[in-house]
Amino acid sequence: MAHAGIIGIGSYLPEKVLTNQDLEEIVETSDEWIRTRTGMRERHIAAPDQSASDLAFIAAQAALETAGIAADQLDAVVLATVCPDYLFPSTACVLQDKLGAKKAGAFDLSAGCAGFASALSVADAYIKSGMMENILVVGVEVLSRVTNWEDRNTCVLFGDGAGAAVVSAVDEEGLLADFIKADGSGGPFLIQPAGGSANPATHETVDKKMHYVHMSGQDVFKSAVRAMVEGARAVLEQAGFQSEDIDLLVPHQANIRIIEAVRKRLDVPPERAFVNIERQANTSAATIPICLDEAYRSGRLNRGDLVCTTTFGAGFAWAANLLRWII
Ligand code: ACO
Image (cartoon, rainbow, N blue to C red; front, side):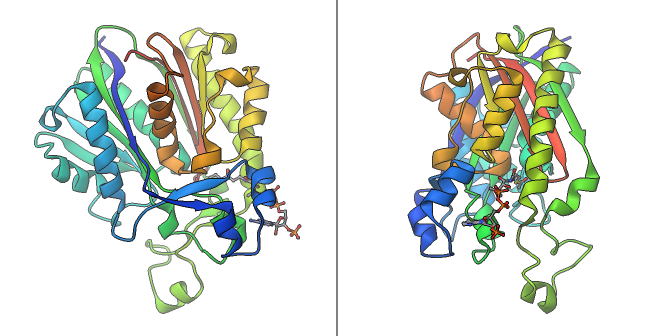
C-alpha cells in the first residue's frame, strides 16, 4: 500500500485586523470578557472584494510552492468550508479553475470546524488506495459574511482565513491514522438556518437574520471537549501510540478553555500544544492548516515530529488525524 503524507503547506490571513477594542465599538462587550471567556484578542477580516476562493487561492499557491509541484499535477482539489463562494458551483471548482489544475477533480466538503481534518482523511484514503497521487486539501472560511454583527454571543468569536496542504503519495509514512464521527442531533446548536432548501432565501428569512450563524455556545462547548478527546485517543490507538508520544497537538481553536481542557485530559504538556487563538480567533475549517503552516514556518514543527490534530464543529461533526511531519 502506498504511503500518504503532507509535502506542502500554506496559509493566508486577510490584511484587516479586528481587535477586541474595535468590537467594543460595535456591540456591548469588553476586551476583558472576550479574553477571559475565549482567549481571543484579535481576528482577521476579509476585504469586501475577497471571497473564499480568493483566500484559498493564495494559500494553495503557497502550499504548491512548498511542495515543489505545479497545479496541473494535482489529481484532486478537496475544499472544506461552511462559507462557499456560492451554494453551487463548489468553491473547489472555482479554485481548480483559478489555479489551472487542469486534470484535477474538485469538490467541497462540509463538516464545520472539522472540515479540514475530514478532508485530510479523504485525501489519505484516495492516495493509499492507489487511485491518486497528488491532492490539494484546503480549509477556508469567510465567516465575517455570515456573522450577525449585532449578536455579541457570536460576532466576537470568528475570523477569516485559509490554509492548504498538498497530500501526496510518498515513500515514507506520513499520515498514520484518521478518525471521523458525527452526531446530527446536535445540528440545531450551531446552524445557519436559512439559504438552503429547508428555508430558502425570502424577505422574511433575511428580516429574521436567519442567514447568519446561530449558536448555543454552552451546548457546543460541552460536546466539543468530550469529542476532541475521543478523536485524539482514537487516532493514537489506531496507530499504536500514546499521548506522551505526541510532539505537537494541534487542536481546533474555538475557545482557549476548550483547548486547555482537551490538552489536560490528554495529558499533553502546554509546550506541546499549538495555540494561536489569541491572534486569529476561530477560523473554523481553516484553523488546522493555518496552525500547521504557522508551526512549520516558525520552527515549532520539524521533520519527524508526531502531530495530532483534533477538531469539532457544526453537525455536530468531529475528526482527528495522526501524522508524521515529513517536510
Ligand atoms: N461580551 C460580553 N458578554 C457576553 C458576550 C460578549 N461578547 N457574549 C455573551 N455574553 C454574556 C451572555 O449574554 C451571558 O450573560 P447573561 O448571564 O446576562 O445572560 C454571559 O455573558 C455568559 O454567557 P455564556 O454563554 O454562559 O458564556 P460562556 O462562558 O458559555 O462562553 C462562549 C460563551 C465563549 C460562546 C462559549 O460557550 C464557547 O466558546 N462555546 C463554544 C463555541 C464553539 O466551540 N464554537 C465552535 C464551532 S464554530 C463552527 O463550527 C462554525
